[in-house]
Length: 77
Image 1 (tube, rainbow, N blue to C red):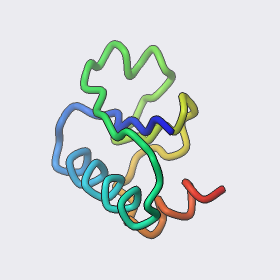
Image 2: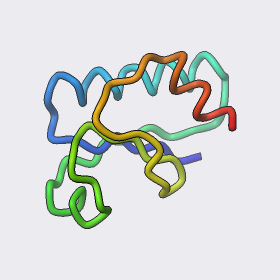
Image 3: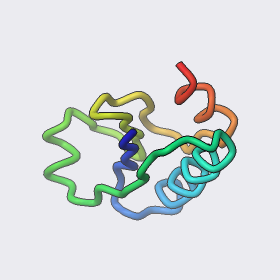
């Protein structure tokens, strides 16, 4: 599973990245969490508000730093 945090590095973006890593660890799943900070690439993906979360190329969350529990629910679908 490939999880990407899309954002420019603002505090919310950093929190979302930490929460995504915590969710992956809690679920004990094989996933790579990475960051996309290039604003052009973020816009090319159709994201107009950050932070955003992408799972295997699909944008599943936009505009907030969800809790690890909320991210776990998204990853468990």
